Amino acid sequence: MDFRARFAPSPTGQVHIGNIRTAIFNWLTTRHCKGTFLLRIEDTDLERSTQEAIDKLLECMKWLGLDYDEEIMYQTAQGEKHKEAARKLLEKGDAYYLNPGEEHSPLLFKLPMACDSMPFVRETGPAEIVLAPESEVALNLCGVTYSTLSPKGKTVENAACLAGFKNLTITDAAGTVLFQLNDDTMKALSRNPQEKTVIAGASRLNFLRREVFFHDMVKGELAKPLDSMKDFIIVRSDGSPVFHLANVYDDMQQKVTHIIRGDDHVENTYRHLFLFEALGFTPPRYAHLPMIVNAAGKPYSKRDGDAFVGDFREKGFLPQALFNYLALLGWSPGDDREKMSREELVEAFTIERALCSPAQFDIRKLTNMNGAYIAELPPEEFEKRILPFVEKYCPEGAASPLLGNVAALMQSRTKTFADVAHWNYFFRKPEELEYDPKGLKKLLSDDTVRKAVAAFAENVQEAGPLTAQDVDDRIHSIESEYGIQQDHLKQPLRIAITGVTVGAGICETIELIGGSACAVRIARALSL
Ligand code: GLU
Image (cartoon, rainbow, N blue to C red; front, side):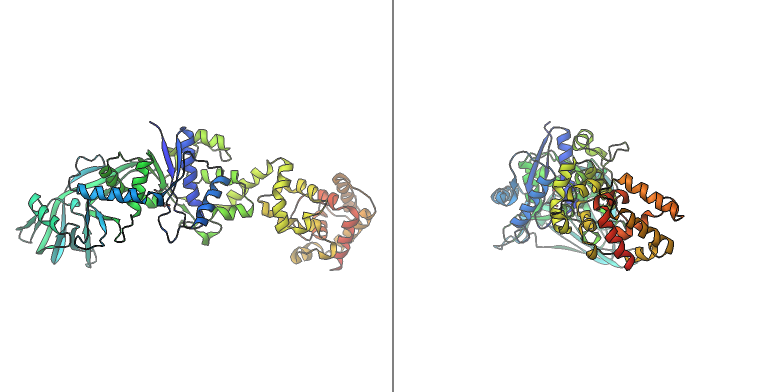
């Protein structure tokens, strides 16, 4: 069987990492089995869908290398087909108008009473619901409404579709039968969906319980009792088709065989199975992905930090790193590999390996992974890629002849391109350098250290070009001269020369900045 999966986003704003992870899982699954990956833009929410959001989405997909087969399906262009499908469902008796006499009435899909032969419905046995005392049961075509008592004694109103109550018998406290759901009573209820048959003095509902079930490729078997479901709207009173109908119809038209989507859609799937059946299409197989959560286990949102693909792009994440990280967010290759190329992921990715517990988003892990990808870039490529970030975050560096050397020195310790914001000290004039006051106090207070630092300045001031090795040797000889432990002069020199306490190797840094410039910087630091 040809494998066909799709990504079906609603373009209503920025692209959330959860959404793009769904796209990545669909893409990888499809590419793994050499199937067809489709893109459908579910733009039917006309108030919230914008062209800008569609453009952004397509750009994100392109950036991440999520190429698709066949033409994009735009759901708005399918409107007439959806309406036609709704008309057919109405004709077949699978749907009904809520207010039949009125010009504008919502159209509801009828969960079918005769569903025993459907492959996703099964009987679980006799069920009894004890009603709240003195309560009424009301029945009409839309279903059954009744009251029960909660464990705390509160009255709870319930409503469910008729199909949930196969062979329903309603009895009073004495066991007298007040109502039975059979062909005749069904016919009477079908006449007017709004007209209610009210049964007073009812005490119990007895019926055969049935449930909808399916095997989810990630979560295993999922089931829901039919007496907890309601008939649902498929066309609004203004004539516009609802998500359920549009989504299922389009999946049918695109001949989708596998639906991989967020587990916020599980409840929809129970309904969609019936819609597929009514439209005469074998339902696809489903995989519902657990959501992405924050450290507290709550859905990961903008409040937790960067949550949109665009944010990561702007901060200087590489698409291959974000792709790799998101592929492993809720999926595992079954061994301890983490850094995996696109080809390796395609090779290993089957949706059955997706994890069934929520995936925690860990920005540190993503950042480290990004650093590993950056470290692998050819140096010329790195230099090219950082340019826009240098212009934005470190403008002094943009025109500096030092930039190439600084880039070469800093590449291995760059985690995101936005890290170039910390490169300013290479390019600034000594009088414009900013000092970390705490570091200054901690590292440049001791008298001997200050003298040694000054001696180093004097030593390199007129030394001409220095290699990192020269610098290292000079530092060591001054350390022994002043009785300072080996390498313990390096941090004081670092703060004096760069203004900060972390950075690349100080000897390499001094090599780059040059002896005389370092001497000027040191003099200023010591004067502060
Ligand atoms: N448009 C729906 C959403 O973005 C997608 C539903 C689906 O994948 O079936 O949530």
